[in-house]
Length: 389
Image (cartoon, rainbow, N blue to C red):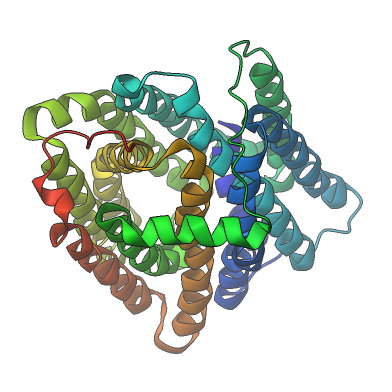
């Protein structure tokens, strides 16, 4: 819930407090790109060398400290776009450490046959937060301003760190087969990601989709508020609709896989997210009509948790445990590293041809990225593949 506040709170701070331009919004969305591009693969190697739970707790404490500087700087009258860029970059680094490590940690806590179920439950918790978070953000922004709203996220990471410290199941010793050099371990993870045809298809789709998704990441809030005339409260309510339908997707993911098979469910969810991405740039007319366009797109957000649960479960199933941290970091690099590059490109293109056309081009590219999955072995999967030897 705290993270959903910051996801909206940082753009609101840039737009409402600092009057950011489309190019500056692109820079803000792209601020984490350099961090992930430089440190992304190293994070995975460390996640395979070290115990993962301490990394998770360290990342939570780091995020709490970094985000706490935003309301402090605002209170002192020292907040600037440069500060927000640094916060976005530092948060991106800690997010990277956390996500790479937790995705490798989960398979050590549960049996393989329960992976889809457990990822579904985690996605369900995230969907609940998405229902309440955006609407709460809109209220908080109007009540105590956007920078102060981010303080709630800082506190939430302290709660997360405390929760993780309560896990008592012993964590297995890290694999004791390290390469002589860290770069050798990184290369091993990259080779594993490229040689396996399933992981290769996931990598190609992730890289392509994240670049074009970056267009909307940079422009969505700015387009909705300045060009369509939506208020922060109304936009938060619309985004909450997506959180509510995500609940349905998290509930339904496991049932859909059993009913239609893994490959059809996975590719179908990817296609739905691509088609609905075309709706926001088509919004026009009075505010109420625009809200209907955006709200309709959010209704189909139920496909996102189905896709994410399937993608993560498939990756965890086909990757040997001693390589999982590095494979996760490679995929994370392709998403979190390329997404900001797309955001920066989207912001620059929008300055020239306008936000609406740029967002439509990004949505079309995002939809076409599904073809990497269609023309891969994934479409033939009925169940998760057998665990690797």
